[in-house]
Length: 132
Ligand SMILES: CC(C)(COP(=O)(O)OP(=O)(O)OC[C@H]1O[C@@H](n2cnc3c(N)ncnc32)[C@H](O)[C@@H]1OP(=O)(O)O)[C@@H](O)C(=O)NCCC(=O)NCCS
Image (tube, rainbow, N blue to C red; front, side, top):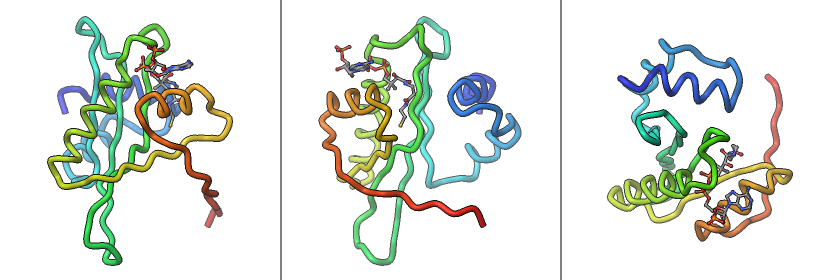
């Protein structure tokens, strides 16, 4: 929660103006299925990652997803995202989660190159969305 201002700023840089510090605090405190990691570079907030613990009655095991990953432009190519991914994988392993899914857009070649460098392989899948 002490990172809320930094998380709000980083999230706004990535996703635009789509939440508030109050809602972030509430989510950090009460959303137990989300793990939020923040990275600092020389005491400056540099990036963040949101991992989710997914559970279904259809499967006996949990699985993990990474929904959001962002590193500020001036801190890119300094292995910050790779460290965030390593850290969420360590946390997931400790929870007996051994499968991690990450969705990114087909146009996001930087993210694709990054995830490949971390050992992820691309699977073709379509996401259907409807505004209801
Ligand atoms: C994708 C992103 C998180 C990578 O962050 P980063 O901290 O720069 O990544 P790292 O420094 O840990 O990169 C590790 C490796 O990934 C690959 N990689 C990262 N950026 C790359 C790029 N622009 N082009 C090609 N390969 C790249 C490289 O193999 C790199 O190792 P190297 O620098 O030794 O060659 C960052 O570019 C970003 O925030 N992009 C905008 C947000 C976004 O698209 N997020 C993903 C949405 S799901």
